[in-house]
Image (cartoon, rainbow, N blue to C red; front, side, top):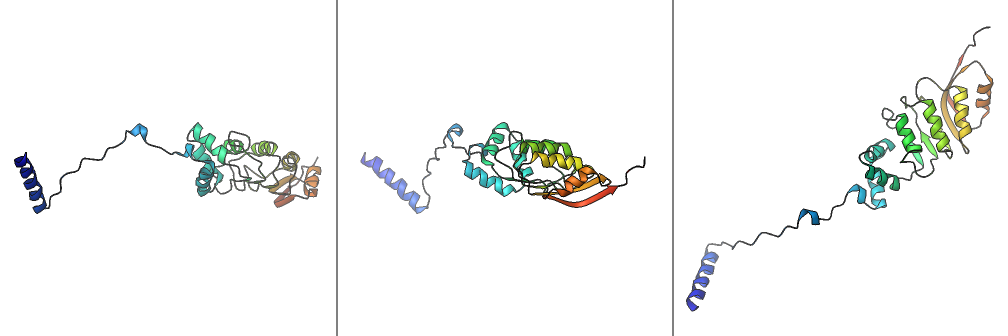
Length: 203
């Protein structure tokens, strides 16, 4: 035993002289299934809301929500904003998107401002459906939406759907000074950016 201890002592001293450290055993790695994983779906609502806020526009947030049904549910739980601003990405704003945000799975809370200016892929009928689904809209910017300008009749249908409308900004075309146009111009919320009057055809 004394000889064995001496040999071990000599081995240790040799390692010290050569400045060689004995190898340490590799660290133990836990199995992958035991790791704690955090995903967007499992984030607390306030944390997910902070992440979504960095994306900015409603369109970008919808893209995240469309990745999976679980992400859609997570986004809808955390997304309770009162303004839908689609004018920042007009080339992505479609009828399907607008209806998803106002009456689909992502609709949550009461929308008070809807900005769809320049969204030429939208149809007037989809905007009317969105207004009927979100009757709390107070400010609506519908300038240059879809193909051509609004008619007085179309704008009056939107107005009729909104209970607390304060400002409606739009462009309009009318066949002369028609009765619907006069009713539209008399509404205190209406702000027409452009009005085109077409001459009625003679009898």
